[in-house]
Length: 203
Image (cartoon, rainbow, N blue to C red; front, side):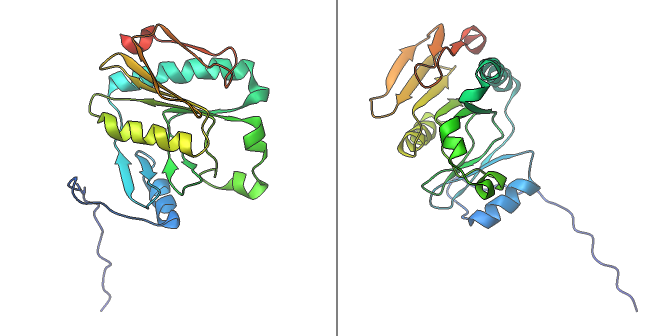
C-alpha cells in the first residue's frame, strides 16, 4: 500500500510581546530568504524581530526619502552606495538591521572582501541611516536602534517622527539634536550637498 504524503498547509503564527525567539545567523538568513514579504531583523543577542509591511502613509513617506536620496546618489555615485528599506546589514556587534534608507561610503564598501560582498547581508554598518517612525512604532526601540547604528560605525543618522513632526539627528561622537518640524535636513559632511526636503514627510 502506497501512502500519499500529507499536504502541509502554512498557518499564521502570532507571538505575544512577552515571548521572543532567538535564531542563529544561518537560521535568520533562511527565514529572510523564505519570507521576502517581511522585513526581518535580528538583534545582537539573536532575537528575531518581525516587521510587517507598512501602511500607505509610511510607504509614501519612505518613497519620498528613497527618491531624494537616490537622486543625490546618481549625481555622486563615486562616493559610495545607497540602499532602500529592504536591505539588511550585519553590524559588527552581530545584529542584522534594515534601515529605511542608508548609504555606505566607497572607502568602507571597498574595504570588504569579494566573499563578504557576495553574502546576503553585507557585514558593514552604513555611514548614514534613516529610520522613519510609523503610526504604530514605539519610539524607544527606534532610538535604541539609532544608538546601535552609531555605536557600530555610523556617522550620521536621522530618526524621523511624522507623528510629532520631529527629527532626532544622531552624529558620531556628539549628543543627539532634536529638530522641531524642520523644512529640510542636511547631509552635512557625510553626504555633501544632500538636502532632504521634508514637505512630503510632514503632509
